[in-house]
Image 1 (cartoon, protein in one colour):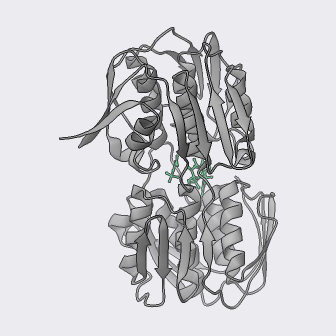
Image 2 (cartoon, helix red, strand yellow):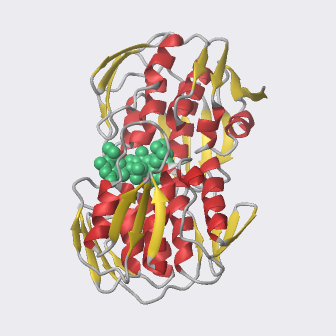
Length: 418
Ligand SMILES: CC(=O)N[C@H]1[C@@H](OP(=O)(O)OP(=O)(O)OC[C@H]2O[C@@H](n3ccc(=O)[nH]c3=O)[C@H](O)[C@@H]2O)O[C@H](CO)[C@@H](O)[C@@H]1O
Ligand SMILES: C=C(OP(=O)(O)O)C(=O)O
């Protein structure tokens, strides 16, 4: 087991480059199986989830190499379309293999994906979409067996604009016979990045980033080269970390247009933010002010993945902030841990009322999921004393060497291995 020890109270100062987006790299790596030959993908973060995806691809027979942040995938030798159960269980994104393998090879066996325990997270929209395209999907002994001669384009309306379902259908539809229309599609920047990658491979996708996407199926895709977009959630986490420590940092490799509402809410706390084309600075020199209301939603709404980090910051903002979580049913697990550090938070169903305190006090706390872990690191940076965040493996799923990044900005943080 590993934990992070954080001595709070040091302002973050300096500059740092934000790594590529986990949530774009994962579906893109899965999509690479759809074209024979070498695909070269740049700025792939070295994260636990990415290592699991690489392992899945190797287990199927693909050749996968990493040099620095560039990953090369050659799926030509793939000999299996059965994703090993122990790898399926390690992360939610293992489900991204379903659409690509089914459309390219005509069959796939997956099991229920694992991942952060932040809600029930069914996959009914993924399976409904593929079934509508002609897939035969049967469940037996915990496995989903999917088969299709060639998927057929059709009109699919998603009850919820699910990111993962949109991506799975997008990938599957790229090699289907005919045109697929995805209505009420997710509009996240990671969807656009996946569509850009697929189009570079020869897919015919229009409308990605809007709520209706059209995919004209093609017979074959060809390998390509692509650079992953910057991670907007890591960007937001670092902005909040700088704000809560009265810091002054410059972030490189960012896309300000992906962070609209996040920047608006951050400015409401009183911090100064300046934006360039692919850089931004954040400076905070006064006590933070509470925000009226944050309500998580689908993009371009406030991202649920930044709800916990923002809440950590608001625990020391003057006044009472209100934060509602509408996307996942169980995404307040950080609240009890923040309370151990002196935070005053009341929860009523899916809304939290955060009454700012002048100071947090260090404690031993447990990361229950990825972003809850990030929130506790942020609280630790602000707290008086040395905070220990247990279960670091959750944080490593989404933040590349978080202790090195924060140390380079002046934080006193180190990893302890038992
Ligand atoms: C790898 C990746 O990109 N992960 C992101 C993705 O997760 P993920 O793709 O799993 O999230 P979804 O957008 O699918 O989930 C949104 C909501 O839809 C529900 N749902 C989803 C699918 C389905 O078949 N049935 C169903 O009911 C979920 O339980 C949830 O309540 O989007 C989430 C919402 O922005 C982010 O928090 C995750 O970081
Ligand atoms: C919930 C997240 O990821 P995943 O969907 O991979 O569990 C996340 O990135 O915050």
